[in-house]
Image (cartoon, rainbow, N blue to C red; front, side, top):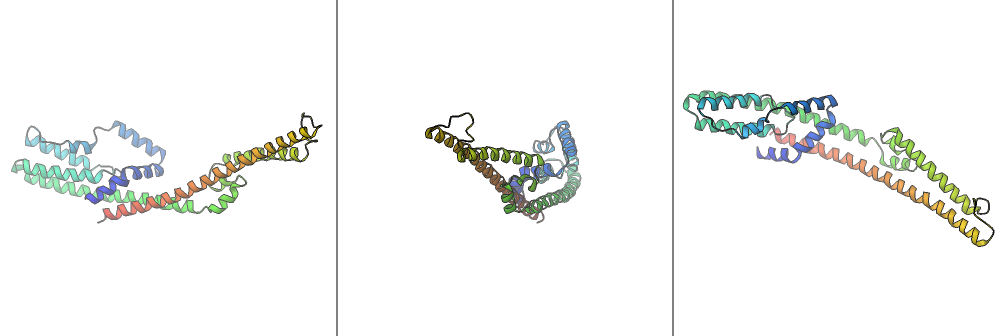
Length: 264
């Protein structure tokens, strides 16, 4: 059981819950939060803190109550196997410390706990299957996009639409490129025709013309710099997208490994 627990501790509590939050509906999430807020002390903590009470009858009833509660353990809780492991220990503890008249009852309780373990385990494996399927579908969906096409479309501002982002980002990109193009065009014609596109600046002397040409270069250089930054940010998002594909694939492999350990 220690090997299974190591997998749970490594990927279960964080990766599994994150995956589930990604696939469950908002209403289901709200319901689970409400249930958590209204819940009493977690059963796992109750089992950990279980101890002998004033007499054997109260001790047995307390243990039987915990076994009954464990029957309703959430199979999406990655502490489920630790819970039943601890319950098994507490049952053995009571077998060693309660009087013989509870021997048969404790044996029956042990059987019920074993049945509950198998039931929750089957439910948990079904949940793991749904998580694996989610990551598999997500990886396939993301892999449909060609990164070279996305890189080319980045040049023209259409990358967001191609990669499934909101259309407003494509509009923003197009507006951004249009503004940079307008500034760059004005800089170019100012540099090429300083006497005609000089604004209110004097253009009588060679020094005046040189100043206008310099301003044209600056007006041309600024949008070029911002456009290169725009391309860099676009390529960064493409690399992030590729990393997301890999992360989904890696997560799928981890959960498949975790499931194979559970099935042993």
